Length: 177
Image (cartoon, rainbow, N blue to C red):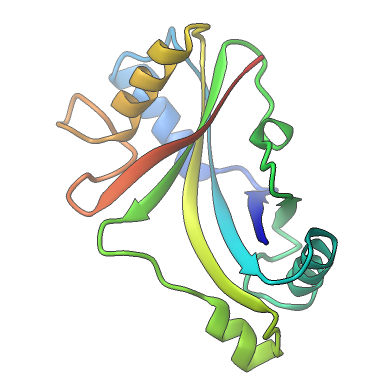
């Protein structure tokens, strides 16, 4: 069973605030970019049933420091349907969630849970930065194209959020208001 966990900050997201100011004030996306948020996505695999997996992961989030600091962050556990529109609300237009990964691969964090806290039922834990982008566009294809343009740094004037020399971005969810 694969379960996703989104970690959202309770504090102002200074990275996203700086990025949206640059994108709207300098790079010309003021008319189309409504909102930008950075979060963390954990993709967790276990052999348990969905109900047991959600309980196990909830327990691990509560009892360990691997996933989040409860004073500064909130954790949202998503079942196998992984409906990200429940986590990121769209006021108008189209919302997109992009998962960022390094080209050289990702590190499995499950051994940390095994050694330090004894959660052997959890088989793998992969951590990804994610970006939520809300665009003032109703056309899904145009929204995806513009989100990719905003995400991938091509030059000083085009793209800002990921470096294509060592990262890649994948749009994992698109939803409308």
